[in-house]
Amino acid sequence: FDEGDAMENCNWANGESVSRQPIKEKENDTEVGEPEPAYFSMKVEAGSSVRQIIPLRALDAHGTQAALRINMINPSAISSLNDATFVSSTSVTVAFDSNNPVIWNDLSRKQLVVEVEKPNLWLLREHITLIQDLIKDWRTSPNSVAESTLAEFAPSTFLTTLKFRDYKLFLSVNECNIVKEHNNLLQNSYFVADGPLLELAIGTKTLQYAAMWSETTIDVGGTQLGLHLSLPRFNSHVMQAEEGSAPPQLLSIRNFFVQGRLNSYVGKDNLTD
Image (cartoon, rainbow, N blue to C red; front, side, top):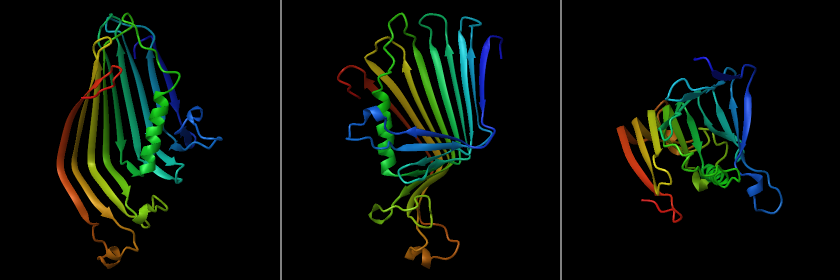
């Protein structure tokens, strides 16, 4: 690294690290009393690390290049809704790069790449509700950043790439929606979507000051997507099936790719196209 860079390192070497992320902020709770907010309890194992590089000066007209690297070993998140694992994987790596040009009105490029190895996602409808609640709370935060002036404005692009390898998505389909021991495959029924690779790329760009429209591009692709039904051990079909037989296959797609573009009106009417 060039002279003038400031580097910050954080390593977890002694046991696990646990972080609890509240789903609903206390000040936004309108119910009577003070009910405990729901939360995700996130854990990573020893050897996980965070590294941040902050340049202290620009070396040329292209400005500075900041970087953030996160490496999480065997991360998992437990939901307080059912005290069961919401998501787990063998490793997660995060790479964020941002260049900040010193020339006025020069383009700033930001890129975020997240790679997840062998993720297992156990999804309930209540989890979606909680995540939506969290997003709403963050959007209404009183500490929101003020809009920049023309002198402060800098055109920018932001590309987020998510890569999931050897993934599995578990959707509970128990009778009467009664779920007990959510992570127990022997006690519950699931639709299971899996595959060796799933990629998602989301791009946004802000090229004009006070533009009336913003554009977001979305690309989704994957290989060997499968969907099958996982039944509990006491199910009559499982009890009558031959030992070692594969679960019922519902869907199989060799390759797929979807492209989309969303133009959003950023005026007061908040219209979308």
